[in-house]
Image (cartoon, rainbow, N blue to C red; front, side):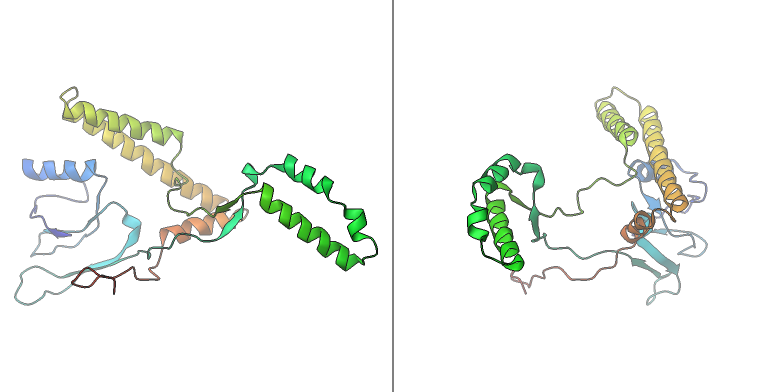
Length: 242
C-alpha cells in the first residue's frame, strides 16, 4: 500500500504510456501481485495502490474522504487473516510404524484363559482391554497430529509444479544473461496463466460436486476466509513478553 505515482497506468487493461510505468507493471506481474483499488485517489488519477499476492484476503476496499490537509483520498480496506496457532499437542497412534508381529506374539503369550477364569463378562473385557493397551504402548509408537500448514494447496498438481520449476530455472538464466527479459516474461505469464486456470478448474469442480462432496467445498471456502481469532505474543520496549 502506498503512493507509487504512476497516473498513466490503466489497471483495467494493464497498459501504460511511460517506460517507467511499464517497467513497474512488469515488476507487479513478475511478483504475482494484483492491484485492488479501482477508484482515483488524487483528483482523477489513481496514484495510491493496494497490491497483494492473495486477492481473496482483501475485502471492502473503498476510497472516501481525506485526512487533514492531504490532497489524497483516504483508502480503507479489510484484511482477512488468522492468528498464529500453537503446535498441536494431540497425539495419536502411528500405525504406519507399528510392529504388529510383536503385538500378536506378546498377546499370544498372555495366559488369558487362566487369568479370566471365573470372571464375568465385564471383568474379562476390562482385563483384555488393559492387557491390549499395555502391549500396544510397547509395539505402536505415538505421533503428534500434523498441522494444516505446509500442505500443498489442492490446485498445485504436477503440471503446475513443472511450470514453477521452469520459471525458477528461467529466472536463473535471465539473471546470468542466458535469456532475454522478454523470454523470461513470457514464461512468467504462462506460469501465472496456468495457476489461474488450475484454481478456476478446482473451484468449478468443487461447485459442481457440492452435493456429493459438501465437506470439500466448505473446507475450501473456510480456508479462503479465515478470521483472526487470537493475538500473538506481544513484546514491550525492553523486548520482553508482555
